[in-house]
Length: 326
Ligand SMILES: [Zn+2]
Image: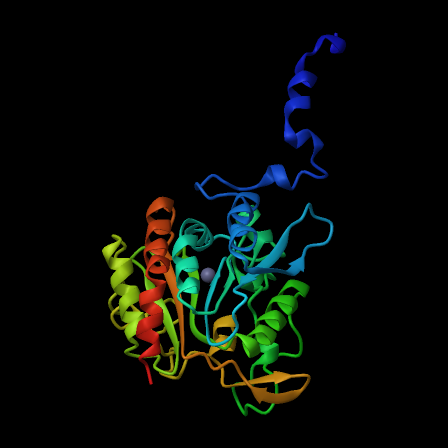
């Protein structure tokens, strides 16, 4: 009887039948996100059609091509950096970048060097995990961030030694080292790091770091853009970490001190970092803005992408505002 089953005809036509493992067919797309492969083919137009340089930051062993990739303009110098997808369950940023490549290309065409790392955590993105190493969203349960830069940042008590002994994972090590190295030839002036917050039901907000963390005109414009796209903004109160929110902007920690969360954003804003045990000058970005759109269950993916897109679409204006900050 089994010989009469006609399904093999169908299977032969399915690309999944030839997949080396089940990972590719397991791509999470239920919220409307593009797959890793779809996003990558969009980003690749930067290198294939516009002459940007593409680099593989980290290739995941034993996968069918899963990798963290970066694109940068041939022109070096003071740069705009755009990061997204540090957390895999926050898909709006990577999808917004894919949708707004034209605005980024336009910024580069105006002479501004640009670095884009659009999907920093492809492994978690593909499974809708937060961290690359576990489905657990709660970091207390063993997850580590690909953007954890504590081993490169001064400790909180004395500043005399690194905050952590080592990077928590090989992808984290590769990404943070890559960023630190590239920051020397593409000094970050404006950094946009696109995140989402699935626990925020009240609205969007931003983290602001750099030379003018509070009252930054770039931050104010990002808030205005989010708002005009239809995203409500958390005007006041505190985050679940106790950080005060002022007009949608978080620029201080729960103690009123500068933000020091050990993230890749702090790394890019930091004036001092550690390399091989020695303290050296850090990237010291003028402005680092982390955009957080509310991604609670039932929120609309398309609206979140539209909100992040509204920010990227205005990257040239954000660069102009940032250049005026002294
Ligand atoms: Zn995040």
